[in-house]
Length: 399
Image 1 (cartoon, rainbow, N blue to C red):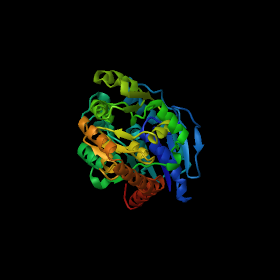
Image 2: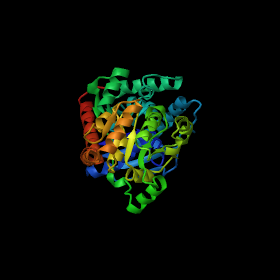
Image 3: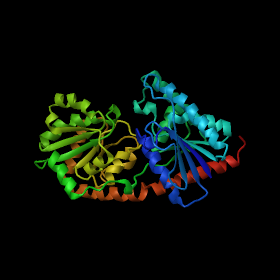
Image 4: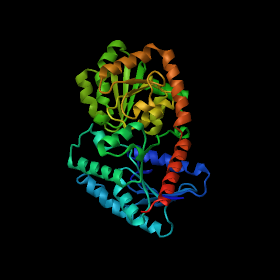
């Protein structure tokens, strides 16, 4: 079985969850030990990398030079670059016939749809998140409306869709009228071998830097956008500091320093460290050093950050929203909080600090679930089974 996969992101160009998902999925194909499977991954080349790279016996990556990124007319610039991806894929198809096209997200949706019709090959699309969902049901601009329209079109054109949570099935049904039986759920995962162990010396250095007087450390990591909810956590800090004055918050994410003004307004600037962008290694070391990681998202299709924290023995507090609700189970592997509710954050922190034995049980259960359910070999097997089901349906169907 030959698969053409299309993704706007792939290392070294990774902006968000799509790039990370595809980067973990691609190498796992080889571990299936099925020589009949080959994947050609066509992606962009915004951050360099080899133009053609065989990353293993099953997957070859093709990085294509597309049009320069422009924020002025973002949507149409992306769609125009899709034409370049289509032309390249057409050249690949002269050598090999593809059984399935697997597209990720709206960014390469136009290419996936065009190739589907040109080859009469079934299109599978993974929807990682929706534009309307990111904006809590609204479409605030022309660009948002164009992206929403492309997402609807992908839902219509795809033979089947893949989402990362049951919540996303409901979202696709509510926003686009996509029937639930057209959608399969395959979660994201964590590659335990890619995590960075934090040795005792490093942990001691981090504690000395951020908690020199034995302070308790809370940790937020994520994009600094409204939907990720850092503003909710900041609003909770005054009451947390009233109860536990020796608490400090570490907030990591590109441009996190733009929240300084809000911290000053709340009178908590002395207790917050805005770390800006941090590497995966720095993030992992902090997960293994802090007292809890808090993810107060307003919208989260899945919540890979919660899994990454759970995989490293970190206490997790997360909003009871979207896909996070399916990953973090209240008082089983972590604590959940009401979205957009600072008092709920305060309550959860109090529960963790006051109940260390319960917190230890949560961490143990969380690690067990990551290792058994959210490993990439299991996820990749489900993905290949999904492919085979679609290919079998296609063989029995007139186009």
